[in-house]
Image (cartoon, rainbow, N blue to C red):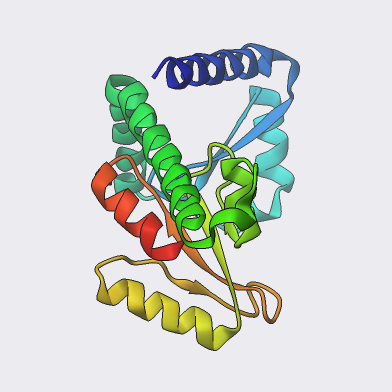
Length: 198
């Protein structure tokens, strides 16, 4: 838990540095999708830069403003983040850690001595489970398109939605399952999914 608190504190400090250095940036572009759960994006800049962008930016010339519900959703998401963001990020970090540890334990259990003194991350990568840093998006390498579709169907039958990612999104024979963990997933469900994919 102390490690999670230290990681959260480090992330906060990085975010503060990012925000404090904005004064040195002429234009900053952001998205309202993914973490914010809305759609669209935004540009922050000076009033004079805004006049230039509105005049010459083709994407701004031929688009409309965001719908009011999208703006309201983004605003609400930012308020929720202020209220419970730390708790949610901590729970998400716990889900990511539990997924990685359970995958590694299951692989060691089924593959035994071949794992040797490998780290959990190395064990997972060895069989194609890519748990990347702080990302809640995990790739489980499968190979062929047919095998990836079959694996996704089996997981869905068990109650887990992990779609098969296939060409043209990825090169042929590198098909994978995409697992997206969230703070709302219970650790029991996360561990059960990890055991199923490892």
